[in-house]
Image 1 (cartoon, one colour):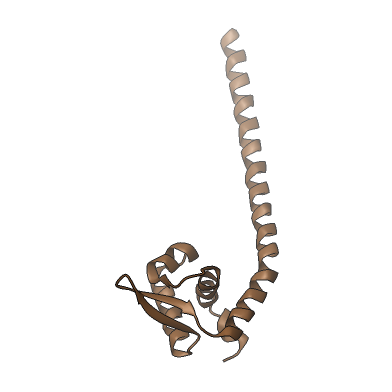
Image 2 (cartoon, one colour; image 1 turned 180 degrees about the vertical axis):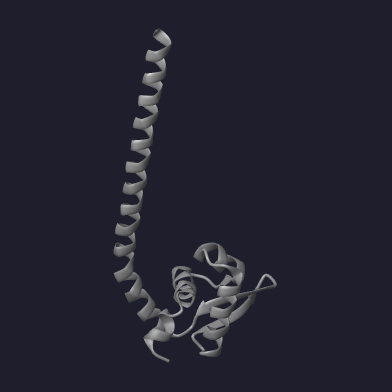
Length: 123
């Protein structure tokens, strides 16, 4: 197993990232909720990671919970998170700026329409 196996497909890395953020073992549905992935993608990723002995399972409250057991994988995922987090933050900031710009343009258009409607009613 090499680092590429951990980051591709994207769902595998998202599952590892979710598990790495959690301090305790978490269930399939928690992984789905936290990662934003669909159940099938998470199940496929978990299956591969279990087979590769990257993660382990344990029963908590009658639920099968998962956690990363390989210390070198934890290091790799942590380093990747440290690099990707600022980039993702910048990307989100750009998206919010674009949304704000579009909303401002929409508001300005509506103000013009209202102004025109009011001036036409005065006649």
